[in-house]
Length: 67
Image (cartoon, rainbow, N blue to C red; front, top):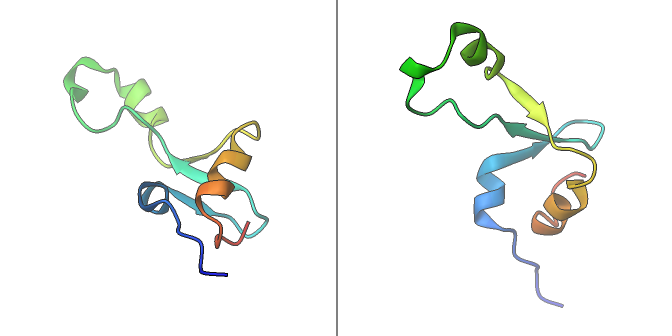
């Protein structure tokens, strides 16, 4: 069988933790930041985990991820 193709957009947006959970970046931190409060912007820092109800969709897009 030929190799499966990974979704190029998903490759750039998601990564796996050592235990197989899926990390993602938070939305809302690109532009229009002057209208957002300091607290809101601070809470948008860092990474978050993908909800377990959607992990199977991400893993289908990234067949060779270590998940």
